[in-house]
Amino acid sequence: MSTLILRTATRYVAPLMLLFSIYLLLVGHSYPGGGFVGGLAASSAFALYALAYDVDTARKLMHLSPVSLSAIGLLLSALSGLIGMVHGAPYLTGQWTSLDLPGFDPIKIGTPLLFDLGVYLVVLGVTMGILFALAEEEG
Image (tube, rainbow, N blue to C red):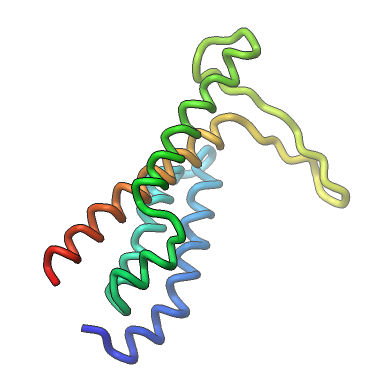
């Protein structure tokens, strides 16, 4: 079902969906969202791309295999918990630092963001692995 209208709309909508998924990832501590919801939103953008074009094109667009994304995300989430232990706190204790950029207010960055980024990558990898497997099984 790859029509010209769907392919054209996907070229404009998919980048906006990915941008929205990053927004969901970043505001997850103060508002609803976070790594899980952001990863699902990102995977929906790649799923739409796979529907509009084909699975191989969507795989090439991801640059990494779904298994690699999941492994990197799992490693990042596990390592984010170790940062607290280095500072003498229990595993997964949040550690924060301030990033001072010229012309901007200081930005607080912490290990919960690293953990959420890991969850984001795991959810994206697992979801896309399942969707790609189902799409290849069907076609």
